[in-house]
Image (cartoon, rainbow, N blue to C red; front, side, top):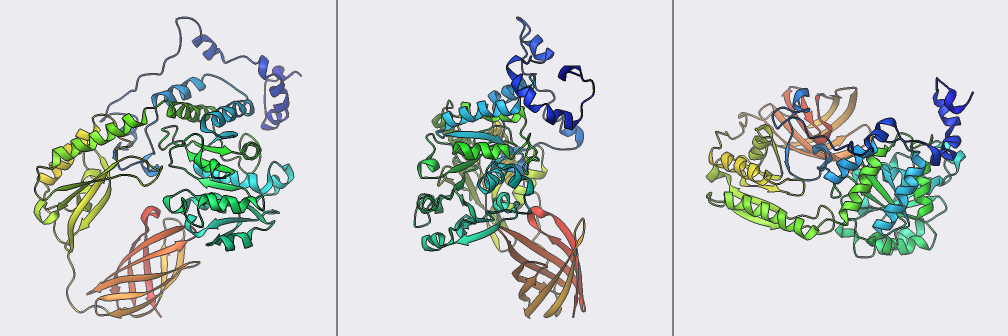
Length: 535
């Protein structure tokens, strides 16, 4: 039966016919819908947005949209994509294409635009990190890629200590050994045949000095070890500055300053490694199959890159500064207020930031209270850098980052802050229990009830009056603890280093003899309950 005569297809049939589809690529027709759209007088146009601020597709599922004065945070859904990106993604949805052919076309364009040999579209910069690691480990050796992560010849990745961060999970997910180094001599001594790659985070600290990106690249070249630079939130200057400094590969987020699709990214650099990285990703059935980048996302991020080199960046900076000036002008009439403008230190999130300062003794609301009020209010507003708490830190501030704002939103933010600072409502100092502090010194067996599953830890605590210090001994990691005990109310804080990240724990509980029970907050990792028994 012919290819087009089959009426039922399995995934196996599709895989078998991949080669035939490639050969037929030049002769394949566009979809009937797209073909119809190309007829004169019937060109498809991007549909108008439906809904309004109070009634839209998000509010209908119980989600309140946010006016974003905080920045390009993934938790706040990244950036607002450009009109050119929306159009490209919409147009791409009308066509069927062979994805290998599409990525070759995109690769050449990304390389040309961004000042490198080649590039591929990925599902975010974290995917670029992962795919770069695989490419450096096994290239496009199909057998070695199929056995991952169980067997690997190159099973180490070097990360300078100054580059450890929560995003190096993209490296660690391959099950490689992370080798930390601090000096050029240490780096040179660790460059063995087992090393697949060196990962570096681009930041001001890595721009100069003995362990700068340029120096690390120079040392790596002596053993022909690739260097990947994580430049996720950076502006992509062309020619690429990291490749000029000797980097082999560079990763970018498509959903930050580029204002492309939020789940898109770019892997840029040496052509054979970029192609190997794509070989390891979907649609191919290798380790990176889960990192599927659709035609809409891929063409969307290409449109974002094309637009980047046409955008008037000086005018954007001027506009953002004018928005911040408008906010300052609205608020500066209030007593005790002052304002500071902070410019970025490097290419990441390059926009001015306005810090608004005041005395909460005068305006009766702290920075943390204001930020919570704005986020819970209508319209819902996110701001950055909230400072100030009762009763011992009344010097307060919040910051406004304009990068993800739109015209008119500066007035919304200014009005909301003005309203909150002039009509703050009533806030009480936190109630501190009085009475003899419970005795909490000793060793405690701790059980944490997560939303799914439990954890067993131990606390070793020492007490001096109301002050408590000690050690948190987790199932895998450890951390120092500090806190207080007032009457029977215990509060403990710790920062547990876990790989390139830190879990910030805040334990609160009620002491009853040799038992404690309460709640624990883990920052972005949410809340749980806990109980402890003293041994």
